[in-house]
Image 1 (cartoon, one colour):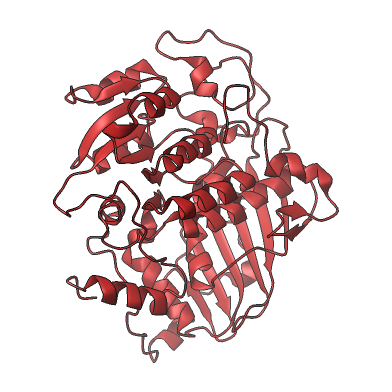
Image 2 (image 1 turned 135 degrees about the horizontal axis):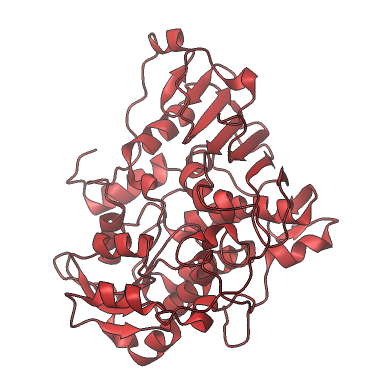
Length: 436
């Protein structure tokens, strides 16, 4: 891809090559007028990924910082004396909305949607960590709000800006393995504690505003297994291994196969605890046929069984290098694709790879991709029109697991037909004082 590609050519090729993955440029009221003009950015959530995301946008002007943990807040503010500090992002949006153009959200999952919606309603560009939201209903609402706001958005699944995902998409869409009938995705996560009962209460550290950390989640006592890292395994705050990793891994089949709503989802895993995710989970998604594609099954595996990826033995190609950490295997009528590796290996020797047809992110940098979009230089690659439906699909696996039933899914209506008990996992209530 010519890195000096003109803007209109970029958008023309995006529409033709990505076939709906890349949306038209969104230019809202806070778009910078010049590519050389720095953005004013507010960062919400400063521990863990928050620190990395703050560094990722540090070439711009960081004008506001927010975290309910004063240790994280003070550390991030060191060397940034001009940045205003907040413990509560609701106050930040209310008090200084004119002092930032864009927002980076790196909180635990349960805060993603409320913070993103507040930013979008003010016409602020928005970068939000994966998964885009904590629940299915929230993902739909955030994507629709971004569309109306006409601002630049990006979900933090950083591999979407890379080269490998584009080569895989190009191979699949060029028919390298024929019509795809199955996809297998896996990860070795969780690497944090799961399968637990609710722990006893502990004293809240002086540096943490526990009420603000809870935010929209149900009231509960503090325990140090929740903050700052292991919240991922607890359903009130995180989305387990599926929510944490599938937006990195399932994004490839969602893009390559133009997946929409699944027609059904079922999940199994152990142990089943009311508050905490399981040690392993398998999720089976069924997608209806679309133009040019037959019906499709996508299977997700997380955790470990016998210390190997939980893939069916018949899908393990001889000689293939299966990474136990995670990956994607496409099964087509003419062969298989493991990452960008064509299988069987002897077939790949005579195969002529398709040309590059998809737009590339010039430097492969996910943050810069979003920053350029904020400055009117084309859409970011994981904008919310893509990230919202992807997140919906991913999180349906959690709905199916927690409901304990196979869900016949009506995507447009966001309803599990014949399974009313799933509704509370599709759309959760918020604690008083918090709203979407």
